[in-house]
Amino acid sequence: MIVAGNWKMFDGPDARALRAALGDLPHVVAPPYTRLRECVDAGLTTYAQNVHWESEGAFTGEISPPMLQALGVTGAIVGHSERRQFFGETDEGVAKRTRAALAAGLNVIACVGETEAQREAGETEEVLRRQVGVLEAHPNLVIAYEPVWAIGTGKTATPEIAQDAHAFIKSLLDLPVLYGGSVKPDNAAVLLSQPAVDGALVGGASLDIDSFVAICRAGS
Ligand code: 13P
Image (cartoon, rainbow, N blue to C red):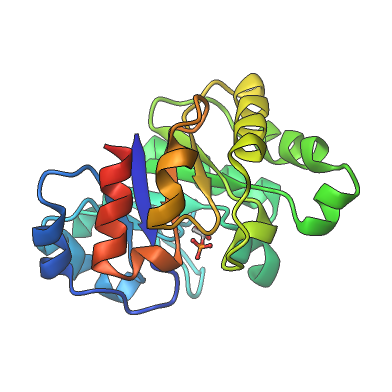
């Protein structure tokens, strides 16, 4: 069971206070780049929110796997729907980032998920098949199912919707699948108790130490 906190473009909680509050609970935090070092130094399991496929080069605004590893970062989120929606990331780019990060020795959380319009049009499986189809199984790869309509909206997928989508993803690629989209302390236990739900990717609720610790506890 993995519970990962994606801080997105928020400064996030104090790293040392979070580390102390987590105790022995398994966790991952993905802070903005500017706070990676502080999180690593505090002893948190720290991932980046994205990673480039080259080691270095003329790629303004990007960060490479060895640059992250030099800081002690052990993984990266790739293909978050906000990257796809607002920054034009494609399935092919997500595949390249994932492959390079895994080859460099990073763990990867690769995100997939349909929009509300796609779900209403009955296209969920087609979208997931396309997004998952560019990835290959790897021991350090996990998928995060994040239905776009559930992100930051307070509209959580029902446990049945999550279970069905996760089971479908696993039928395509036999990997652990985390659920993301409005996971909170009061819905974490029921979501995480679904047999095909192997953890959570938490946005808003990971910015508050008490609520993130409560979700990590629900997953432990
Ligand atoms: P929220 O938990 O804020 O809905 O965000 C989910 C998410 O996008 C995590 O990557």
